[in-house]
Image (cartoon, helix red, strand yellow):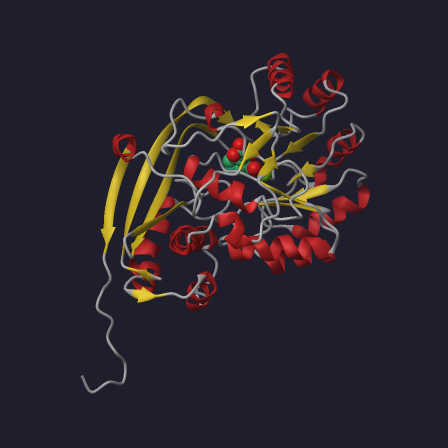
Length: 378
Ligand code: OSB
Ligand code: MG
């Protein structure tokens, strides 16, 4: 599969409702969109890095520079047999997994379209629909949160995840658990606690949560292992896990008992699948997280979540929860807490280009550069 040229965009899509986490309030989703073109086909992916490094350390402008200066020149104008070969060629580049994931995922879409296969089939998926829950941001009141949780439970969502931060935790969890005693409820602190908050974390531990996501620092597995030893509630790591090696170390040291896999955080579908396999070897469940992706990233997430060990509901809820209008032509909507895998080849979704153009803040075409041939007499 020859990758002939690329288009990079920065796109800004307004959120229907502000989304508040322990680290930011988001009112729109600004993201990098990459289109790879080759052999008359197109593959698309979005980056999950934000403008500012508040979730992990990559940024949109950093990714744009790295893609233009280093990654795309290494990829364009060449033939790639498969995603493995492409990623082996980029394996000397350290870190920057969100940036690398953007290229890897766009290539998977392009390559599986050229093979005439759905992405989920090429990945080894085992199901045609995936179970989903919702992630509810920090709200203005406990009552508003309970109302929202009950409404989403009524729509069939299979798990309620509450964003928490110090000062917004025990009371809201207790109220939601009281309203929905039979539905799995989880919390996500996005790294806003430390071991100094042990009293609060212990209080949360007694509330029957299905699991607690990333309570401690984004880059600290060791304190998570200390905390897990003191808690009944399983810990789930998100920010801490960027690779299969991270996953192995986290599970070996009992820093967590399950993992939130975000394909955009870990360097792409190959690494996401390796994490899935490592977790399976430890009998640890995984689930598919989200980063408020547009339909492009959402479709990639849904295909990934068809792998066998994605046994907990993911965050890939209906597109209409986030946007008045998405940037793809196909609807991505759940019914009864289940999201159907988009049918068709590749991710199965196509860009709504006229609408996308109205949201595009920056557009850059990247063509192959002529590569100097080392050692040839020219
Ligand atoms: O930690 O899972 C997270 C959104 C943005 C950044 C980080 C996270 C989230 C979510 C929302 O929880 C998941 C979604 O609905 O896409
Ligand atoms: Mg999280």
